[in-house]
Amino acid sequence: MSEAVSDKIKNYRTAPFDARFPNTNQTRNCFQNYLDFHRCNKALTAKGQDVSPCEWYQRVYKSLCPMSWVSKWDEQIENGSFPGKI
Image (cartoon, rainbow, N blue to C red; front, side, top):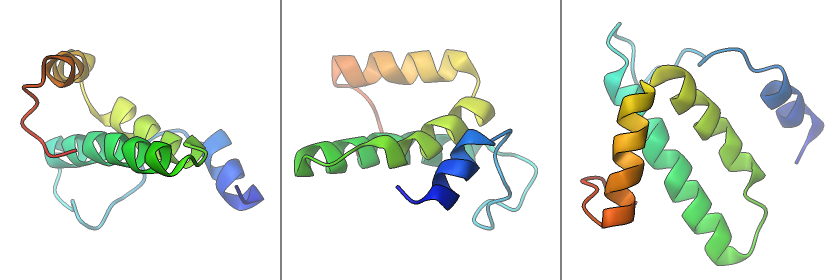
């Protein structure tokens, strides 16, 4: 991973502005980053590559999403009833 990306991840504080979600309500941003994290993990694991770039999505969704939502989604993934496409 390049040093610039590593520095950004290391110095990460909170989710940066995302032009796809300009409104105050960040619910969709939270859910999209949760999906992106799991999609990234799945894709890179399937290719046998390092999954460390996926940490960015995880940090963003963990700063935006209530932990009760994350735990509910994790349970749904385990049970095979998660509504999103990963």
